Image (cartoon, rainbow, N blue to C red; front, top):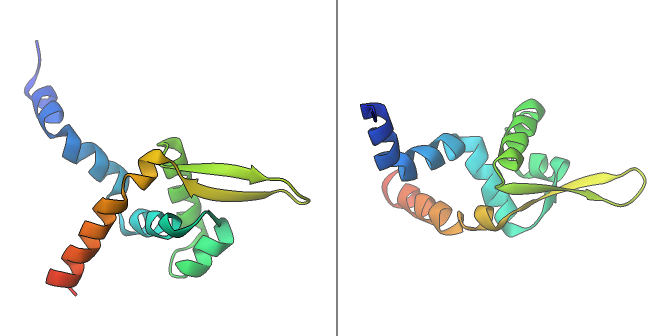
Length: 108
C-alpha cells in the first residue's frame, strides 16, 4: 500500500529534491562561480570571502557526492585540486539566471 507521503514525494519530487540539494545561499553562489570557470578551493574562497573554510569544504563535498561538481586532482608538486561543474551542474545555469533575474526585478 502506498502511503500519502510517498504520493506527495512522487508528485513534488521535481521541486523537493533540487531544493534539498540547492536550498542554501552558499551552494548557489559556489555553482554560480563555477559556471564561469573551474576553480581551486582558495579561488572560490577569494570570490566568496564571506563563506568560512569549513562551510565551503562541506558544500563542495555535498556537491561532489551529488554529482553536481567534480573534484579533479591536478598534477604537480604539491598536488592541487580543482573543482568544475558536471553536465548536471551546467544544467543549473538557466535556473540560476532566472533566480538572479527574479531577485533583481522583485527583491533588490
